[in-house]
Length: 483
Image (cartoon, rainbow, N blue to C red; front, side):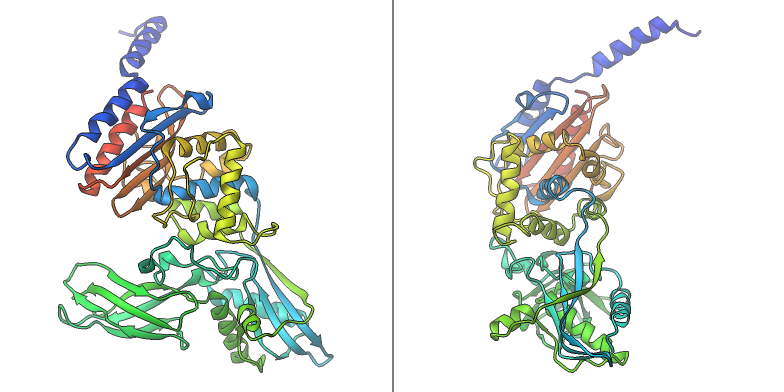
């Protein structure tokens, strides 16, 4: 028997009412979680705000507790870049001549690769990038260079790594610093041949080759299936790197990824080699503006002969948040300060970012923004501050460009492994944040009633396993869906 429309509407009303959850019930659930196994010593916080409401509508559990945000910092960085730089912004890399070009096609002087902070330059295919540059030289009439290829990374300052990063992160790919001339994702591959368990894992070499770096191998062979426990230790601009930890046994080879110590020099050296190989002779040794400055040298007036643009910021933000890419976040972060009166450093970029949200009414008192990607354990922000930033981001005209970059629970990016099969699946779009003993999420919940909430939920210093923590977070999300 088919029920009358009015009765169906009544039934739907009572169903929604029965499922509805109050903010007080969610807070009570957080209080319960705080007392559960592995959580008594943890610092946890929650804040949520209806984006159609007012900032004063924010509620939560310990919302003003300062906590380590981990990679949820990328949500702050990308939301800020989306508003200050704009979703259509494109990083620009220039080829410049510093010298004179004669009728025979000889450039007497230097060819400068002027970096524009582009984190995607040469990221997937070095040869493709060099082919474009080779064509640009040909069109400019350059057939020979009586000088050097010079990497210019001065759009950012020379300090590649933020002060607050840990030493054991520096030489590894996820700790690659933001260079004004970032190239090939500022990474290289290190290959080993594992031996017997406990024995040395023989160092085979790097790809691309880094002849200027001395590698001291202390890598051992772990048990089969032990995974990548290998680390690369080395400072920016260093000439010596240490290889430590273990790589899994039972394989003929195993590869880990490291961070280039001087991306601008690597780019200049690689392009010099490419040109010499194709017969466009470069007489000088590759160098950088940084090295020339140290040597007391300077460049002649420059002329732009080629400009290469990146994809749009909206596109770059997508991988940044979906895959939690540190380098892209750091380059976007630094770019906030590029062209300003102060230098494009981590410190100045963080000041600009904090001020941007303060100007919108977010009280940033007690926060500390030590980087743009969240790798720093010195970062401190409360869930109220994070939720308010996301609330204000949702009011901006370009919000959709930012929102589309956030992974969706149970379906995409770093959230594909959490929330699947729960009430939260498909209804939570958020940036995750994970470092040792830290599990956080910040983003938006789309409720069954049609409302959208900005939220942040942070779990710091828990002592139980990650799966257990994720299940607790899903419990909160599942309740929030019914707000």
